[in-house]
Image 1 (cartoon, rainbow, N blue to C red):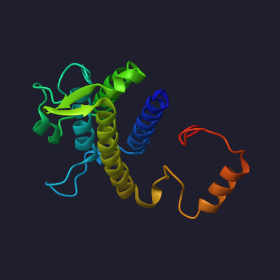
Image 2: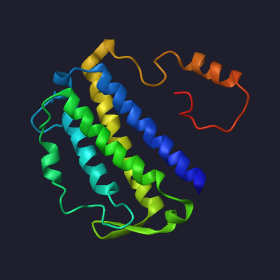
Image 3: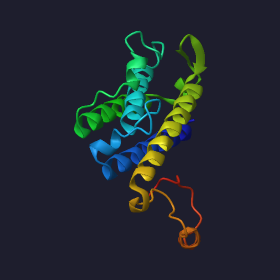
Length: 183
């Protein structure tokens, strides 16, 4: 179970890094771009993630993950005034998440926590949020790639580079390591 916690933390760190790298590649104006009024900008998606993180991970083991103070609908209104404001909020959400996760011990994984009065084991709650964040960060990366077009620098294996990437991986000895090690 300790390996699960370590792996979960590394997965969250990986997805955070994809968001970070996307933010680095874009201007504030690009982060606020929406394809239509009904769609979400990168800025809005990030705001939603921050709201979710603060709600879910604050007092994670002792309070419902949907806090009474959360204003979820307001998360879909872009209110950031600068890229720095967006990134500061983004960092605060991740700080809350990592603080909660790093305080857990293996026996905690079977405890029950609630999200909107629905019981989850801690493991289930972690998995739920990991999948939710990966989904939205995938949207962030996709929008970033769409906005940058041919100027986008790949965050994974670039097109046409799979053979050389695999060759480099298979040159190494077999070892147990997390796929994000060295990323």
